[in-house]
Image (cartoon, rainbow, N blue to C red; front, side):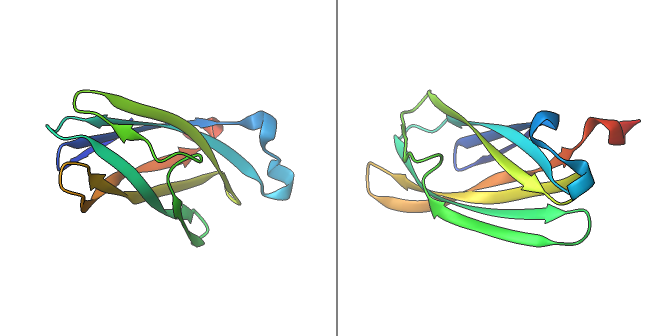
Length: 128
């Protein structure tokens, strides 16, 4: 599991290879990832947007930006967390992702970026 803390917001990510949705013969590898966002600060925050950098092991790079996560812009109160699961497809059986969330501190409407740690997407057979 990969973890970072930025301005009191802890982001942890774990990944799962999904062989049932993958087709290696056609260079299609599907991964799910579970993100837990824990507010360790003293202020409520709202997740406004995300910006992902996605890397295949063949050198391909993609960027994905958008509002919220899985259709939501959750408010995370101090001492609570928000968890969601999403997915990513790669053209190779190994790759990585990293990025950032734009957050709003509800107390004063100030904006800040929270780092999403780099995590690896690896088909389990690559470990052998």
